[in-house]
Image 1 (cartoon, rainbow, N blue to C red):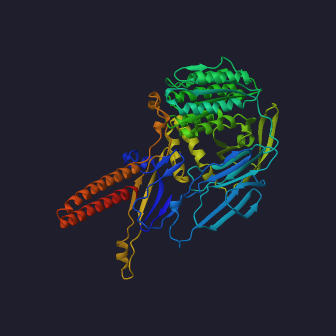
Image 2 (cartoon, rainbow, N blue to C red):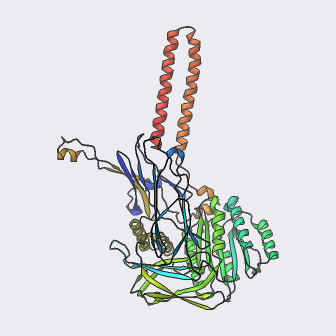
Image 3 (cartoon, rainbow, N blue to C red):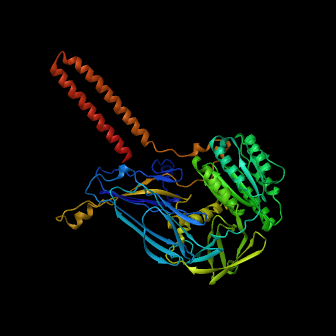
Amino acid sequence: MEIETPSRSYSTLLIESNDTQDAGLVANAKDGFLLNRRIYTLKVPQVAGGSILSVKVSWSQKLLYQDGQFSLNIPFSFPWYVNPIAKLLCKKERIRLNVNSGMGKEILCGSCSHPLKETRRLVGSLGFLYESEVRAWSMDDFSFSYKVHSSEILGSVLLNRVSMLDVDQRELFCFNLYPPTVNAMKVFRKEVVYVVDISASMQGRPLENVRSALLAALSKLSPADTFNLIAFNGKSLLFSSSMEPSGKESIGKAIQWIDQNFVAEGGTDISLPLNQAIEMLSKNGDSIPLVFLITDGSVGDEREICEALRGRLMKRGLNAPRISTFGIGLYCNHYFLQMLAQIGRGYYDAAYDLDSISSRLERLLNGTSSVILADLKIEALESLDSFELYPCYLPDLLSSRPLIVSGRFIGTCPGSVKVRGTLADLSSFVVDVKVQKAKDFPLERVFARRQIETITANAWFSGSKQLEEMVAKLSLQTGVPSEYTNLVLVENLKEKQTSKLETVDEKASDQLNVKKIIYLRALGVGFGNSKATADNLPVEAAEPKLHETSEMVFAAASNLCGKLCDFCCCMCFIQFCSRVSDRCAVTLAQLCTALACFECISFCCEVCGECG
């Protein structure tokens, strides 16, 4: 963020955690607030009334993919009270949109919330512009959707030569594999085990939302699928000792079992139910074994769980279960869940607030169950001198989302690569994927978050300080927050206005170039809280609260109201005094009015001083 005011400028900056001279300033920071991991609020101090502010915000976000279509949604609605009151002030809106699919295929546009004008059309690339003078700023968010039309599996490899400033001098690549948007391919038969945390901390809305998403997932199983349920706290509860067919009778019994056994109580033990789920799945090759782990807690043996499962899954080879994980709230260790999903060639998602649990979990359960191409291999990678994938293992291709992985390599990449896999009928599948240089496609920024999260999970798992330092450097280089960097707000005082009569030396001495650093609250999710898990603290207890600004305003307003009440009482007393002396009444009325005004000024100063 960059904010310009008449007298000061402000900008956010990432610094290494090790560079923080006073760790207490970071730990006790009250400025900067991340609401539900979606909205970041920031206090800009000392802004005079009537000032014109210039605010520039840059961020990155994932495109949503559903029914073969990508969609972009950006906040673009402004409340009525931010519209300038001055009639002479021109209000303009301008949106420039550039679309680059990276596929070299025709892009088909879908819906759009604003009247965009096409400015550029190339194969795989489009440009649009919207510009308008308006009476009031937009009340609608900006949305845009598009698809890359194909009746077969498409892929591409984009190469990006790194700059000299990159902390990792290995070349960067991105591998994309898209499912067909028409004539849907056959989906693998699947064996699914749902492993659900029912510890006491899940009581109330968290467990209710999980139950809702789970029932929706059970209803969408195909007749050829099999399933089972494991509920766990300090012990494990199994719906059945073996996998059950997904018929109406079995699903009906499962719903009854959920209603009877989904009672939030007890502690948290993840290892036992996870091992039970893996042992329960068969070792034949005509189905895809899936495990879904859902938890809100952190346990002490997480590294041991990952290490043991990595060895077991490697022995199982191609028939090893795919493990997908879902974290709820901020007490669970999200990097443990990410590492577990990487090892299990599955997917990870999370809900940090109660309202998003059901929708995000349902999307994970349904989306990752539709495997159309399994056991993928990119042959060209094996001929390189070295390579590293983010994530470290290739997941399967799903019908509900494209497969996108990035990585680093040393060596010479050929002009095309072969991608091999297994289809649902167990036949082999091979597709030639073209390798091309990324043009106007900043791979280092697009995949910075994924790279940072993957390396952070590996740093947590291995305890490597070297990987932690790499994450911090990548964070500073790309501007993406991490667990090893802190966000600060840097305040710069602008130069003092000088007259033409001042000499150069006088002007230089009057320059106000002193910087002030305001420490902001951490943006990371941390590495779990085993104590909070052991104490069974609820999910909502971890959600950060807004700074005491509103409480201070209400306190000052209450204080003001109290003074005004005192003022009213004084006025009643003045009415009594007026019967005795008109001069006395006038004097007391002036005094009380002055006191009330002073209290109004005091209130305004307190509020302005706190809110800026």
